[in-house]
Length: 270
Image (cartoon, rainbow, N blue to C red):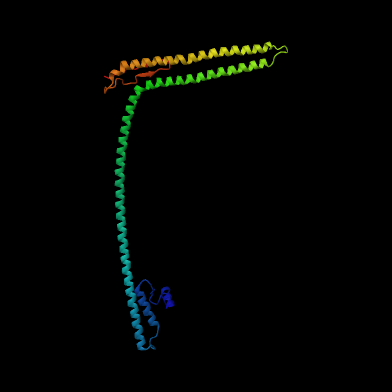
């Protein structure tokens, strides 16, 4: 049977017929052709009738199985189409929901950013207004702190230099005393070196102390005078405007011109 089925699927008959295993009518034609090729004269009538009934039952079973499978395939196809439609609908709903979510969050973020920028602008304006009054005070206090640090550093260096000078004089004196003449007297040129180092050391100490005095005392005294002037100006010009909503100045009160002086910029609001 397999060989006959192969021939019927691969070779054309006299009526140009080709077997198609996917079509039930092809199987009917195949079975009819097989019966035509097999002589039935020598077959008993009962056996022949039983064979026909068996083939009829087989055909009915095959048609029923094909109908069931066709129905199952159709149901599966309909189910697939339904699921595909549901997936498409859910996808469209999810996309619309996501777009709405992004739009809402973008608007909320833009509003929050605008509010934050507004608060930062207000804070910056307030900071600039406060710093316009505080900047001169902080400047002169910073200068005073710088001079105080310089005083400590230069004082330490001065005392260190004097200590090194004392050590140097001691070493030279020891050198002179350890190199005496046979009669127990120091050599004149060695004593001259010791005296020269001592004179130069005293002169350097005097110059150093004078430089420290000039470099530190007078700037500190000037800063103290500037502080007194600033306090008097604040009492005379700024105090009367305390508690007022309108600031007395549009520009900074002080404009630093250098380490030697400062100017007052008066710009009263109308």
